[in-house]
Length: 452
Ligand code: ZN
Image (tube, rainbow, N blue to C red; front, side, top):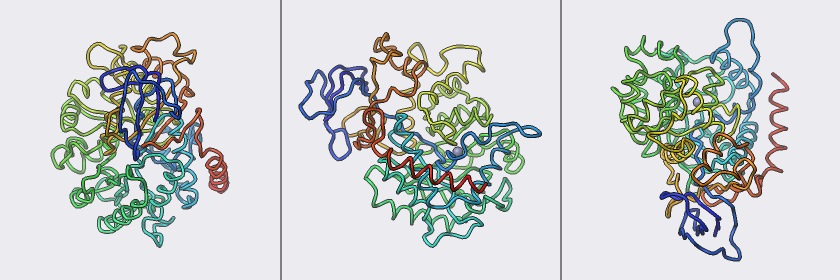
């Protein structure tokens, strides 16, 4: 049982809320309750968000590409360092880095992660003896931290638009559709040993890394799980796809695939007004990664157009340059304000922006993950986060202002407790596996970076 002084329920704030948890799910919600003797007691309880988009290994590169070399720095020069990492990265390092990243996510308030997993093979491209070796390393990291996992093995067949061959670091990603099918099957089999909230979907990497016929053949492999795809992140990508397929990426997706509920369009940055409205109305979730998009210089998302068309969104930490849930939401809103020279943008009609961002990302994120979560409701997975509303940043605020304070004013350390499908991973602001996970991470990155 969990007892909260206050909790954000689907109908709004409630006082003295007691939750019963059974088999990882919320079994009962009682308001105006009294605490029981053995209850976990917290101050303010919120539904915990899903982090819908992560490439965990990239965390080890954070801070290594923030200097200006000759010429214009761009996404593509960042990608060069990522490929150098890939010449060295071992399965043990993949696991140690993922565990560190998942731990940091839980301490930041994320109960679950969508791991968009595209490094599959050995350096040079030869498969491991177990084709799903690196998927099982991600599973081990999820197991070590208790985070909820939606695993998204990535189909990556080409080095660029128009079926360019793979080269260099990309060889570790490469599969044709047949081998990708075997990989998904092996990952699903390995995932059977994981907790019941684990999901396996599929992720065609992007239109530039697949082709129309491959995409059509790969989509059935989702078997009811979520489909994630990077789309329209960079102007160069829009130009390349337009030149090759005769349509802009999102336009092509809308006209040639079943894109809709169950899909998550990662980034969806460079869209026309028609593409924005069309994709929003399709029911696909926009997978926004505001900190990474700012870091890579991608550009801002069309928030007002998306919300006006009734679009759902969630957030992801993508490159994991920084893992902060509140900063992710804040950056999303501020990117809109800076572009539009306006305040309070990511909300439809009058109301609290912090609440709209938080509850919107909770519901959309869970939907994109194929995860029954995103609200404190009976039957959902117990993805819960507790914050301390007596912290100086929040203590002057009333309930209606609390999420505005959390999103716009708070430091990162307000989280006291976090449960991922009932697994109580963060207690007193600290992850219970910290003492094991951090030394393993230090060892792994020392080894990895030492040879660069
Ligand atoms: Zn990504």
